[in-house]
Every structure is written in C-alpha cells, then in structure tokens.
Length: 94
Image 1: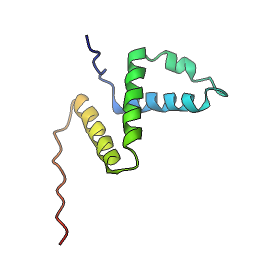
Image 2: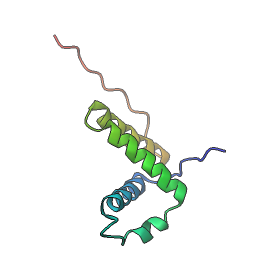
Image 3: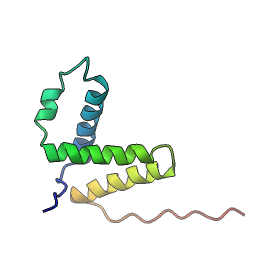
Image 4: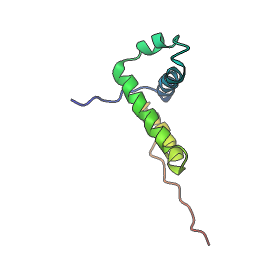
C-alpha cells in the first residue's frame, strides 16, 4: 500500500525541510534540532526529503520557479481554497 502525502500546510513542509537541511549541514557541531526532527513521523521526513531534492535539482533554471509556484498552489488547494491557475501566456517575440 502506497503512502499518502499528509495534509500539512506549506509552512509545515518548509519548516521540516529547513530543519532537515540545517541538521544535514550542522549535525557534527549542533545536534539540538535532532529532538525536534524525532517528533516528525518518519514518512513525513522521507517525503520532505523528496520534495527538497526535487526542488534542489530544479533550481538554477526556469523550472524551479514553476515548481515552487505549483507546490504553493497545490498546498493552497489542499488547505481548502483556490482554483486552478491559468497558464501564463507569453507573446512570441516580433
């Protein structure tokens, strides 16, 4: 049975990702946030790793902005509001 993504607000996902990133970078010198991460369910931490990895790989190109916008929109929809955004139209260069 496949795990489902918990219905967490965007700020919660961003907080979990930020704490994981901090621990990845500073775990050898600062371990004070390990207790905070221990309170987050393992499957949520794993999914946050996946989200973070996907966004990191997309950064540096146009896709990063679109991914971030789509994640924001997705979590807004999950939170109970909003409609599907219209795709931005660009005029061809003359």
